[in-house]
Structure formats: C-alpha cells, structure tokens
Length: 370
Image 1 (cartoon, rainbow, N blue to C red):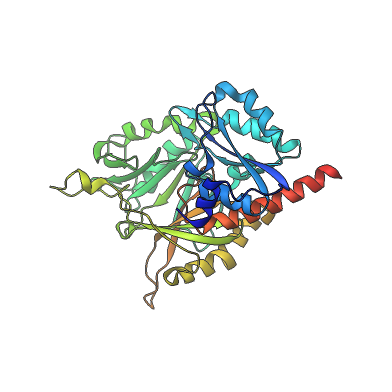
Image 2 (spheres, one colour):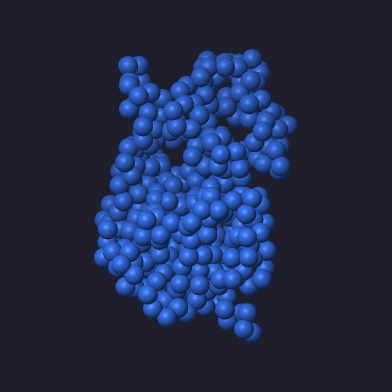
C-alpha cells in the first residue's frame, strides 16, 4: 500500500469537505458498500480526500435504479466505472440516469454523450485523417457491410472488424481470406477468423457465415468499424492513460488477442502478459506523449467538438506499433479509446483524477449557485 492508501485506511486524511463525489460501479446494491481502502479505487479515494472532497461508493444495478438516482442527486459530482457490456447487460439505463443527473447540475465524468463521441470504436473512423490512424472504414448497416466488405477484404491482408461499443474483446475479429478468390469474393469464399475474446482459437468458415454472425452488431443503430490488421501486434500494446488532455501514465503489455497460437503452444500461450505500468515521464514513451498532447488530442477535440473541461477525468488510448519510419523510429496506430471503465491504471493517475474532479465540481457548484 502507498502512504496515502495507508492513511485512508487509518482514517487520518479526513478533513472538512468542499464537495461530495460518488464513485459508481456495478455491484449488488443491496449489499453494504466496501470500504474505500479495500477497493481497486483506493488511491483515487485517497487523492479525492486530499483535495478536500468527500468520496463515497455507489453500487449500480438496474433493479436499484431509483435508489441510485436519489443518491447521485445528493452529491456534487459522479465518477463512473461501468463497462459497455457485462453479463448480458448494457449501459442504456445507467446512461439515461446519468444524463438526467447531469441535466440537474451534477458534474458527471464521463458524461454519456462524451462517451458516444470518443469512447466508441467509431472514433477510429471519425479521426481517420489523423496520423494515428490506419486504413479504416465504417459500415452503418448490414446491407452496407454485405455490399462492401468482401471487396475490401480482397484488397490484400487481414482486416480487423469491431462492433461499435463493447469491451474485453467482445465483437472484435481478425478476418482473412484463406485463398485468393479474386477481387469480389462470393459468400462461399473460405475465411479464417479469430475472436479477440480471451480463450478464442482460429476458426475456418465461409465468408457469408461469418458476416451473418456479425448481424447483431447492427442492432439498435449499431455499426462496424473495419481496420487493417497491424503486423507488429505481437510486439505489444501501449495504453496511454490521460486525465482530460494530459498524459498521466502508461501501461505496456504483450497482448494475445488476435494473435493465433502456434502448433504445440500450451494454454499459457494464449494468456496476455502482465501490463507493466509507467509514470507519465517514462523516457521510452516521450515521443508518443508529445504526439498525444500536442497533436492528436487537440485535433480529436476539434473534430468531435469536445471542450477540455468535458474530457473525462480518466480515459485511455490504446496504441499498437505501426510501420517503422525511414529513420528507424516507431510509428503508432490507435486501436481504441476506453472511457467507460478504465481500470487498472497507474498510481500516478490518481492525483490528476482528483484535480480534474475538483475543478469539475467547483464549476458545477458555481453554475448551480448562479
């Protein structure tokens, strides 16, 4: 434990509160909320306390929606950690609740409307002209997907398709033709697919059968994003953690999603490596940090119309290694942005989250008073 989390557990950081903030995640709302020091958010609880904010746990479930609403309306701000998809449930009711709470003057991070701008896979298409992008396309309907995807797959190399909103690899697939079938593959053309969901193995089937499998991704206005597969994927992924427009740390991990096991590999071969956390000033990532803070995030904000004050208190951008430049330097390709439920995170993130929360609450309180 850090000194701050030890102090939180001992109860010695208590001080007069200048505002109240609720930390929300899924759980049994009839159960007693866990002690802050025992949760994965203990450093954020401690950092909020240090800046003078009284933080409390709120466990969300659809069955307790109105009780949760009442609790959130009694605080000044809300920080949310709820996945887009979990055990057959989505965030639709929670997002409606959060919009209502925010409309009544409560500060919410991340606001559901901000998530729909930057925390879905469509952001890869909307920012496709930035230098963090790879060859990217968007299908807005099943008919559009059926009409255009086969020819695009035939242009050469594997593709990665992603449902617009998901987590944990759900609805993310590597797809490649097994044989050369010309520029316009028929539905019977053989493909090899690999789901990014942990434990998945490659599967051979017809292109038409695979595309039919993707039909549910278009339900309720859903869509599919299509990117070129990055050959350097086995070298790992860099997760850049941000608080609003500032990098607050990194996680470097050798991932196994979409990396096919080799013949003879045991079960451990499909398990991802440990995510090694680094602070914001870690030397290996300073070129990437400069690009994120001075080029990519400002450009994304302009494209998506997101003022800095509405950027999430904690979010992350996942980068894969792209082709090396002529001088041997690495390039980076954005593969997704996570906003809904960012955890784990480096210790260095917690104080910055507290600073952003304090600023957001002060602004919200001032607006209500005026």
